[in-house]
Length: 383
Image (tube, rainbow, N blue to C red):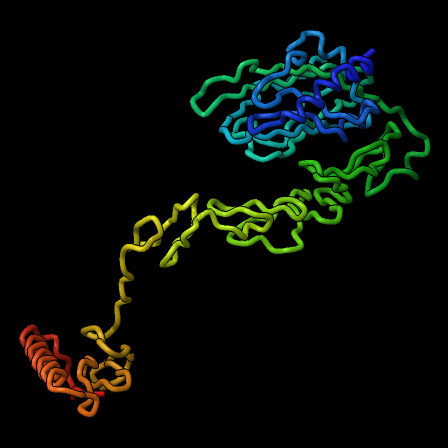
């Protein structure tokens, strides 16, 4: 019966995919559904900000296949799209704890729904005390950023899981793998990180993503094009630019202000100046001391030198004289502050007057130094 009902829902799902817009969506992936039903399709609970009507049907549990004993988790995928949503798993319940323990989730019970599609797992641990079919419930409240619940939530999903209790195995001593040992009941007792009748299945928590295989406890073997502890990250053949991050195979997640396959394009038609970075359409984030739409207003504050006064046409050189740091002048300039042009560099009387004025200015500065007692001991040297 459930197969025909699921097939009847297929048209709804296909239409959901075609109108899949920029709002909140929650679904079970095609791979997961095929694992416990044999049908390649996705099951949606929320599409484009709307809880689908059949999810609210009290008999929805009866329409779905029972999760088989060999399947220990269910992966859900969700995304918030352009809006901000916050979630709260307010119920994780087993209705028969003699068979099935309360479900666990691979993410925090409260938080913000990710903007882009991400997978989280609901783990379904059998108690090991008996065999049978147990129902379990998942309660999910979703609110807008203003604290308003999404219509149709709290969502109350109710599913069924089969658990098989394994009896004693006379050949247990020979079959226990990965350090497992037989107990007095002739059942393999597995080391931490392994599970299964003969301890051959490694555990990875959260589950390996993007087709990764759990090859050892906590270690995922990732398919080509993916990397990370849980195969959650992609490998991009070409490096993401402008601070972009490779999140899926050959897929970059761009920082604000950039777009393109490799984040190579800026949203700022006029480039940001003076070290500013593009943060939106023609919006620049400016460094200190600069402002304006393109960081064009302002000036750089010169770095403080060790010299008593800034070198006007030179650089401060530490230990340049017996008195301490001194100015090292550029070609064509001299004086303690590199404010004197060499005589052969003057071409007219106006330059000569400027030269005399600068000399007078330096003499006045020297007198000020003597007055305030800042003149250092030792002989002063001109460079």
